[in-house]
Image (spheres, one colour):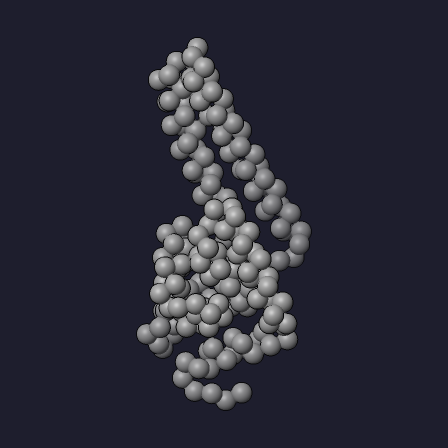
Length: 178
């Protein structure tokens, strides 16, 4: 297919996905986005994330996202700002263009759980300090100490789970992620 300029990138992207049922893909994007929203993610950010997830390149421009989701560029901008703040996407300049494209991190789930480990560590430390402040013999101190112990347990389980994932992933023959 011969095209010129920026239209080519967009058409190449669509051509690689022409074999898919666009309605079924759209339903999947909306269903997964709704589940992410139910879990606490902002609605528009969840939709943009899901759209990036299903794109073969794992990257789209603002115009492509607007078109794919039937949303305004302002809505895309707000969603990307949120997703960037939580390190789920990054912004890159399209080669030979002044347009940005938004890129999904290949190891997004691994990175997300790794960052969660760091968050749990901070919470555990703060909770242990709080338990000491409240006193171990007070009901509140005991409750806060148990919460700290739970987060310590959860953090160790996540670390072990991520080690098991790396070993399992190696058996799947998946391509390396940068």
